[in-house]
Length: 160
Image 1: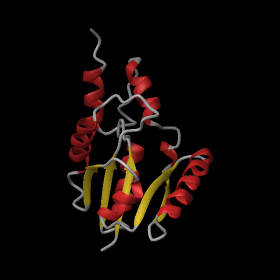
Image 2: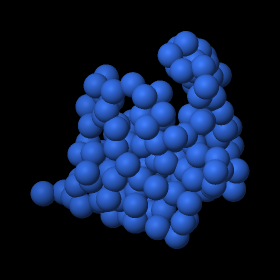
Image 3: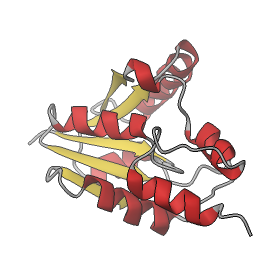
Image 4: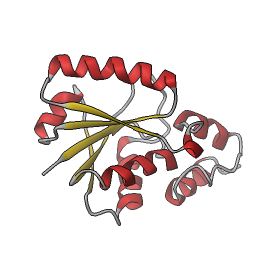
């Protein structure tokens, strides 16, 4: 059984993330969406909120599991018996960062490969940070995120 871990903070999940998940589900027998906190970023949602929303969004994709992790990603991938770490690439700067991370992960676990999936063109400008900021300023982000995320953001940033 081929398994891949798709790690990220997913704060919030975007249509770009969802596109990667759907496409990966056609490649691997099992996709584990692994939600983590990013200490370099201010989180809008708790890990539990992110997991619950992602589970709702992907419930129709039977090969997808949603989980959380802390610590080294390669250790988590080993525990989950995943041979691949899946990463989405939007831009050249994403590739530069992800390439360095892939080489670092390989130095810790040579048996785990990193696979990159290119983002669909319509999502190359989309980032969770951009979506959070735009939603907080009252922008309509409904075309950029799944409905469940849009509902959460509208409730979270509802004018007083």
